Image (cartoon, rainbow, N blue to C red; front, top):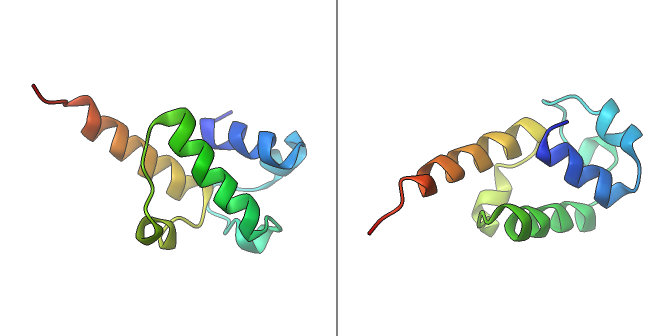
Length: 82
């Protein structure tokens, strides 16, 4: 199970939701409310150390969107600096 799916299980309190939603299904259209989407963003920031701006949130609609976003930020951050 992907990290984003694990966070959705934590948010919804049920593995069934995360198991039933396809990677490319719009989360808002699948029954998750705006409050849960905000909680998802907060958990991603807290647990994965990836900052998500309000502008970023506009493009994050699906599990796949979140996974690509996190992967891109994690790889970019891994390059590090001095």
